[in-house]
Image (tube, rainbow, N blue to C red):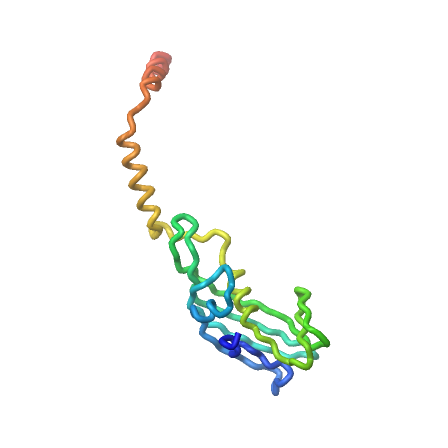
Length: 171
């Protein structure tokens, strides 16, 4: 976890009401976090911490791409990600995460936001991810197979007999 120490935010030691952070997130970050959804990516991330009456509002912003497997061909593809997310934090007796607000122990006074950042990025990945039209290697394979199968496949002779009946009805 030492690799992620640069993502520690010292809440108790804030000298002004607003503090900003900037990071470049790359494959090393995803490797260190060891999350299941994303292993590769290139993003620029920012964090703005605003202190208001005992509650800290953390606003995360990130933009870039992550590598995910295409649902059709399973090859890695770039998935653009751009979003802004907010997290509320307060200082208290013990660590708690009830979903709406995270409580950080007062004696620690700091929060490592690496995992929060990872989760926010992962949540921005669409449920279905496929290459753009014409970019999937599988598209060319399907088009080739479809056209050769139609040319090579003979018509079932029973259909010809049925067509004769339809033709007779039209006359």
